[in-house]
Image (cartoon, rainbow, N blue to C red; front, side, top):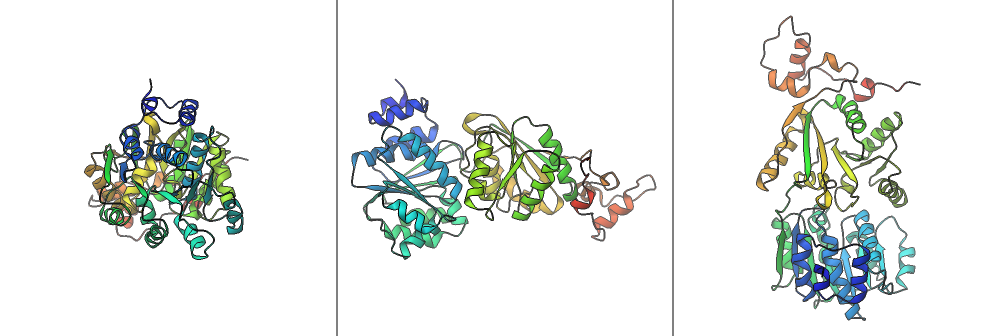
Length: 429
């Protein structure tokens, strides 16, 4: 008898779990599901990729099947995470399709969403901003909500949704079950928990909060901004599996995508400037192995569950230290092995110091840095690595050191390194 059979779940749920080949629970599932089934408020802390979605969806479906007049609401930070949860919900309800769901996020006409609401869905999966838009226009009410779930609550706070979360909490019945899941725990999350959860809440932790997955092999490469693109090509060419690249801006996503396409690499991208349809298409292509590389801003750092990702590359360091863990957590999921490579320039040293402090605090592995030059980069042989320059800037120049003069100029801030587009090697016709 499997763990899930021992929980004595309803037959339609057991059928779905068998179809999904759910046999052994993850730690967060094993700890959370029995408590949630009792109707208790729960705070769940677990690192990314540990099965949190099933941990709250299984007992929520149980509640809805036992309470025909009730509904549930799941709040998430991004459209992608909303879509991921909806896909899992549809698989979980394949033998009880009457327990319908609707996704309410931005980039979809509100009229379309209102039309879908006519079916009276039992589960609403929404981003806070768009849901509040509907509430303020009095398009519908949330009086039937019996379970409120906040997934990736820390990310929603990071994105500035505090006011919207407060408004939604006031719009749902006070008599309800509330589940709050977060990969991190700090004062902001603690304050939110006090507002939305009852005093009888139970806190569950699976693994160390914000800890980098131990199944991910981390690599740190010190380089120059102008050397990144050719190093990126080397990393992609050396990887047989699928690669997810994170960069800092929408413009960089597009620029790198065009660069890689110039070398015949199958690539697509997701960022806030693309339509929801384009983002869905890119994720679908990536999930179905129709493209090898997906480039993204931090909009994809959480909630994107593509188990086959073998390599994550931080082309740019994240602005927030926690996002480093969420980024590299896109690989090495469900105990599979993965690799995460980060490019580090001198300008990113402050960000890296903050990341190292987080890794130390959570007992995570800290990768050792190596200085590396792209073997294909034009002109880079004439310029010492910026990080190397920082280490040897007090060294006295000698005639045997051809880069010494330029090195000292760089250290004084008087040298201009050529931009990447001037240095890259163009593909042969």
